[in-house]
Length: 100
Image (cartoon, rainbow, N blue to C red; front, side, top):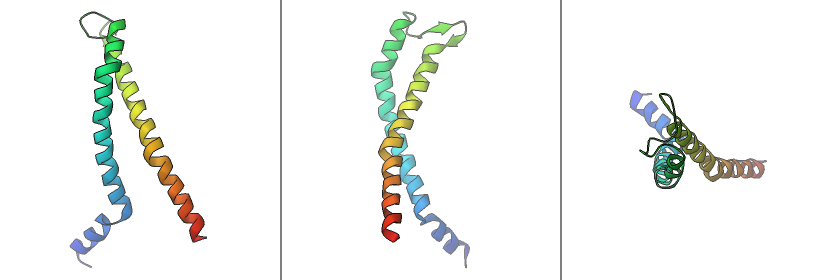
């Protein structure tokens, strides 16, 4: 089997295509979360911190940026889990049950 044929078989496997779709959707959803963070959450965090918009700082550390990044990560992880992972698990379970 030639290398191109092997690559074609690898690239056309369902897992590789699913991963590619997930990466694209995750990137797009990340932009939505960034917009939400920059438009709503960060102004709230910054209002609790300094007036210059740097957020809450302790010495050299910008706690506002850390809190913002943590909230951003949690939002992306939760939405991806509930919108993509759980439905996929449910579909796979139904597929397994129908195959039995």
